[in-house]
Image (cartoon, rainbow, N blue to C red; front, side, top):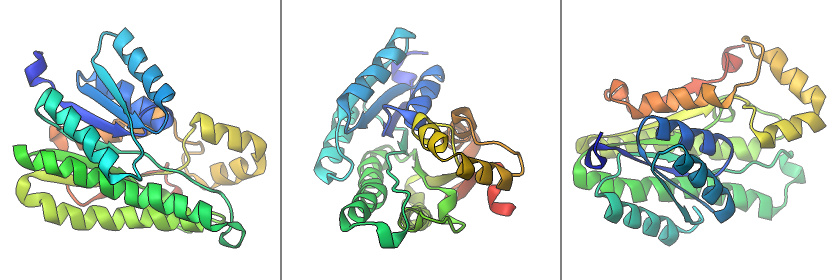
Length: 251
């Protein structure tokens, strides 16, 4: 496949965790992979790993809370490749504390990154997708948007906002042939989560007991649905939130 025919994906929070898994998976699909986050080191390591596999990857350092920084990243990517096909808005944070225990700093951080950051990324992507009259935007929500989660009320509220954003934005962008969908994962075995569960084995046991498939998600369980939403097979799907939780929300 020539470089001119290769699609371009932009992944926020692409340096580690699910974002890194997504970056590697899109590289295997012969995309030009563009990642950014606040951590230059994480992004650099992921980009170098992708490049070592013979794929094309570039990284930027930007904070999704800063609309100007996000817009600048997208501008540079469009100038480099002349197209942006898929945006995966993956950057997010979580504080596992009851609302009454959370200070204003934790609350504002989750709202700023999870909600405002996703909005900034959606807007930046849509500007350039509109030029080509095509594209797919994929937002990362959570089962917390759909069911109550003890100790994650603010986090769940931010993810609920992403589901609502996805529905309305899908209508706004449909005339430009841009699809907008969301993914709502359950608990995923990322390094961050595994550390927390190792410190709280009773919570891990409780969650696994509520999942009909009986286990946490592997990163690949999240990657494949995202690849589907970015593919031509999902061209007639928009405004949808795909739940990938092993059955947690129906148990």
